[in-house]
Length: 248
Ligand SMILES: Cc1cc2nc3c(=O)[nH]c(=O)nc-3n(C[C@H](O)[C@H](O)[C@H](O)COP(=O)(O)OP(=O)(O)OC[C@H]3O[C@@H](n4cnc5c(N)ncnc54)[C@H](O)[C@@H]3O)c2cc1C
Ligand code: FES
Image 1: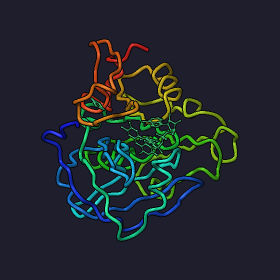
Image 2: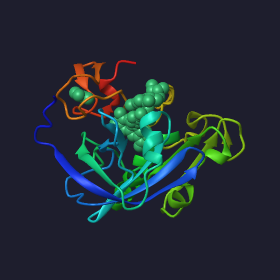
Image 3: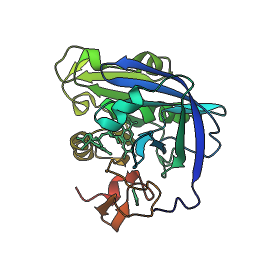
């Protein structure tokens, strides 16, 4: 049995669990979020009937609760999608390092793809609060898969959208919509997108990685990746890594 160590384990009540795009659900949870410190951190959800917790990024939070957005891709997230208002979830919260909002210049790029988009919502909010002028690029496969766009468009920031099939915004990938002027980047999305961004963006950057996870808090080493600084745990040393630390 894994020890959960000094991690914040809490019960959260589901306020809402609603589809917002095909197979994608917005999960609003009420409960203590005092352990959530910075955008890009994640929560480990104990879905009833499943031994291993499932990691989901924190999209946004306030003192009374938090919002997660997840895609139903397998048995765990499918079971989660069938839970409803009033149900409770046991969660290890405030995990991972998150993005360093201060480690960027005045004009950062924020780049998200698919279900990598949610944590960038709180990140963009934090960058604006820190006086930065972010440009946001959101990439999806096609128009009907787009979510959170209205919410991003409420920000005082330039929002660009790409779709692979060209049904909305710029046709192509996030790297087809890069602006001329930016001094750093923040990215979250599927590995091929992260690698393309890593190669296309000449500036410093912070990239959020995904790995299959066991414990989620640094104890099992199951999420280890190789970096220029040696092996690192995505759950504890990440999920956000500096571009310079990655040897891609
Ligand atoms: C730090 C972190 C943050 C994440 N944030 C989000 C989020 O905000 N929204 C969201 O929808 N998903 C997110 N994920 C991915 C999410 O954890 C998985 O989709 C989920 O655990 C799948 O559980 P399942 O039981 O439904 O699927 P399983 O039955 O376990 O697997 C189904 C399929 O999903 C793939 N899969 C499972 N886990 C992962 C993973 N960690 N990364 C990539 N592919 C996986 C499997 O290879 C398989 O093809 C995040 C993952 C990590 C590590
Ligand atoms: S999942 Fe156990 S060390 Fe990262």
